[in-house]
Image (cartoon, rainbow, N blue to C red; front, side, top):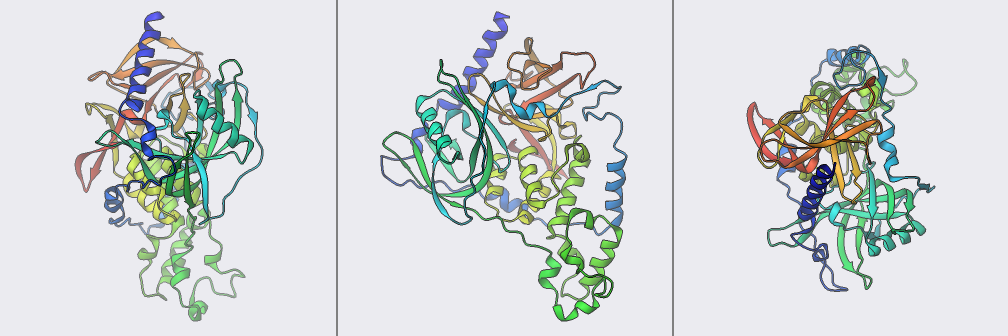
Length: 486
């Protein structure tokens, strides 16, 4: 037991050195009262994706195939590949983060007006480096530093909102901030009187663009930001059609009291008749229907859902994937194997249509998960499944305050395990964790989770950290490895 704890301490210390050792977070800003420019986010991944045409097949059978798969989802209902019946795991447990202890709930919401310029405090902590917070993402934190504890106390007493901005270490050893970030709103918290530790649960709320930053006399960093808007584009056909030709569209005005394009939801695009209607109505516009299909947010949302079912073990009917294109674009950015540069690019896009096209182009090319250090294959994207109602990827914090974004897999390979299984501070109640390292380079990859009860399903699964694995992608039929950190 002592050996296991010693190795665990060494791993945590090694991770903290990676996050802290190169430069102080204070290097993000200049001297007191001076304005600091933020670095430009690399646009190459965005240009690569958005220059491609995301074609949507005009095939009514694709929707029928989706419905049949959704109705016939059988076999192992836990989504992990284990066969046989048993006690099904309560997938609401990981999202509660009960390992933080009893918390006090905060009520109410703080919503900033879109396009407004506001000043908010930024939480720049070593454990949050390389974290790209996305709207709706849950963020648990355990804070020990008195300065940050004091800041969060003031935030709780005020509007419960602070900012999270991705930061990284540059080649010259200084810390740099991205142009885009997300507001985080605290909804639960607890404070230990003896140690002064403040633990919180926060939710990502609104995207923003950083205009400038400065350091206050207290040492805290505040930013002047612009709240980015969420723009819904609506039906492309509605935007292009000539209203004078409405009498020729389907259904005819006498057949329906409401125009077909005004009743838009995900169920309406799954019917075979919807393809006939769109094809017929497109004749009355300058472009064929396949052009409109590439920019219809509902069709893109359906295509993303189909791709998720095709390439992973995620079952949308069990997870209750968001049907709204805006919510689905955020869910996919949180839970799918996307590089941090892709996530940052998505934060800068103001419409679900653009985000879904971006996600779809990258998602269709994700194949394998490999070690960032030695490129050893760790898992397959087809083995991604969800142990939480929030999705396959969750954010957790360990007792030392280090934040991990973890992706759950039903199968994993080329891993070496250290120590005995432990249930202490388990992020999945009912499961014991074992430290897992890459068998080739011995880099810390994540954990193996084993059930403490024989009848609990699944009996085992794996959790890999985003910083330790990268996606192996296939571009234009040629298998090539792009060094993307998940």
